Image (cartoon, rainbow, N blue to C red; front, top):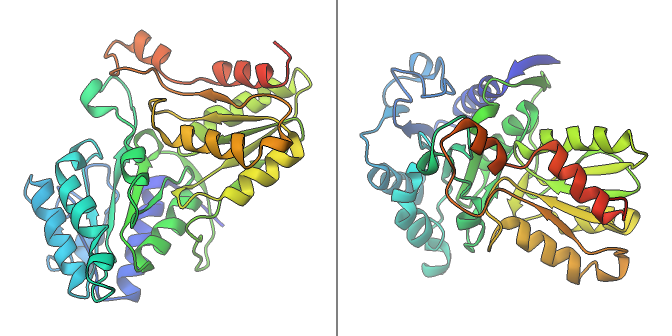
Length: 326
């Protein structure tokens, strides 16, 4: 089993799927000659050429729309946005066309396209480049949304996304690209909609996704020092969400904390908390706790940015409240 970086796992997934299926192509800003803003398409232009690795102009709505049309015509585009913050300009194509064409055409057309790129805060990128926008996509019927946290997961989920018949949004944590981890040498995929228990425990369930997985695992270690055994659930997919995995864990621990980097109102975390508070109500021994980013634009100052985001300490504090161990 190789130890590779998150960006290398993405490049491997793209290369393997492009070799497997000649309908697959990559298009986006600086994906070809520059090999991707985060070097996720390294070596692909040399391997597949300009017809399958295409540098797009700085027009997110334009090349997203081209991708939608190509998918409807039978190809399998992977559309890379330099950042999901820029993908806001392409929401009309993604939401009004990609997500709806199957139902509006009574099944005559599908849109097997992948829209991918980095999301969330990095380091001092300011309010317009630090946003967690997964709730915008997860709100839309017809879209699937994956948010892998590890090199193994991003490779397996991206391969599944490329093979899926529905449009899939793949949001990659911007600070994860250099992170290394084990990736199997053999061919594998990870099913969309399947969560994973990243740490088993019996006292409290911590539900999270994307790069918050790491802060949550650190919080679990802090809690262990105080005798609290936390179970960490990595959703990996936020639409469709693995309801069974969440509820099974809560039935065991009887307590739940939902952790997300993004804003609290109308977010994915709110939906997970609602699921546990209603469907899992009889299993709860305490109210569901939530940990999230500040409800406001991201500050630029490093010290304020740190205060605006969840940390292992704030997650651990919420878990202790759920366990009545403040």
